[in-house]
Length: 66
Image (cartoon, rainbow, N blue to C red):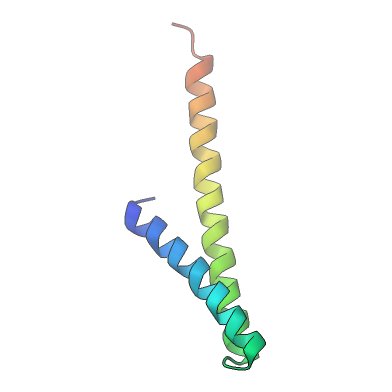
Protein backbone atom coordinates (compact mmCIF):
# COMPACT_ATOMS: atom_id res chain seq x y z
CA UNK A 1 0.00 0.00 0.00
CA UNK A 2 1.61 3.22 -1.15
CA UNK A 3 1.11 6.73 0.16
CA UNK A 4 -0.95 7.58 -2.92
CA UNK A 5 -3.24 4.64 -2.18
CA UNK A 6 -3.66 5.83 1.40
CA UNK A 7 -4.48 9.30 0.14
CA UNK A 8 -7.04 7.80 -2.25
CA UNK A 9 -8.57 5.89 0.65
CA UNK A 10 -8.83 9.03 2.76
CA UNK A 11 -10.28 10.83 -0.24
CA UNK A 12 -12.93 8.13 -0.66
CA UNK A 13 -13.86 8.44 3.01
CA UNK A 14 -14.15 12.22 2.73
CA UNK A 15 -16.18 11.95 -0.47
CA UNK A 16 -18.50 9.42 1.17
CA UNK A 17 -19.02 11.70 4.14
CA UNK A 18 -19.67 14.75 1.95
CA UNK A 19 -22.06 12.84 -0.30
CA UNK A 20 -23.95 11.50 2.72
CA UNK A 21 -24.37 15.05 4.01
CA UNK A 22 -25.45 16.18 0.54
CA UNK A 23 -28.00 13.36 0.54
CA UNK A 24 -29.43 14.61 3.83
CA UNK A 25 -29.83 18.11 2.44
CA UNK A 26 -31.31 16.88 -0.85
CA UNK A 27 -28.29 17.79 -3.00
CA UNK A 28 -27.45 14.16 -3.83
CA UNK A 29 -29.60 11.20 -4.81
CA UNK A 30 -29.88 7.95 -2.93
CA UNK A 31 -27.86 6.11 -5.61
CA UNK A 32 -24.99 8.59 -5.30
CA UNK A 33 -24.97 8.27 -1.53
CA UNK A 34 -24.95 4.47 -1.67
CA UNK A 35 -22.13 4.41 -4.24
CA UNK A 36 -19.99 6.88 -2.29
CA UNK A 37 -20.50 5.06 1.01
CA UNK A 38 -19.75 1.69 -0.59
CA UNK A 39 -16.49 3.06 -2.03
CA UNK A 40 -15.60 4.51 1.37
CA UNK A 41 -16.34 1.22 3.10
CA UNK A 42 -14.16 -0.73 0.64
CA UNK A 43 -11.30 1.73 1.14
CA UNK A 44 -11.57 1.43 4.90
CA UNK A 45 -11.59 -2.37 4.69
CA UNK A 46 -8.47 -2.32 2.51
CA UNK A 47 -6.56 -0.01 4.85
CA UNK A 48 -7.64 -2.10 7.84
CA UNK A 49 -6.47 -5.30 6.16
CA UNK A 50 -3.06 -3.81 5.42
CA UNK A 51 -2.79 -2.54 9.00
CA UNK A 52 -3.61 -6.01 10.31
CA UNK A 53 -0.91 -7.56 8.10
CA UNK A 54 1.68 -5.04 9.29
CA UNK A 55 0.82 -5.73 12.93
CA UNK A 56 0.98 -9.48 12.33
CA UNK A 57 4.41 -9.18 10.67
CA UNK A 58 5.66 -7.01 13.54
CA UNK A 59 4.46 -9.56 16.09
CA UNK A 60 6.22 -12.35 14.19
CA UNK A 61 9.48 -10.40 14.19
CA UNK A 62 9.16 -9.75 17.92
CA UNK A 63 8.76 -13.51 18.58
CA UNK A 64 11.93 -14.41 16.65
CA UNK A 65 14.81 -15.59 18.81
CA UNK A 66 17.91 -13.43 18.68
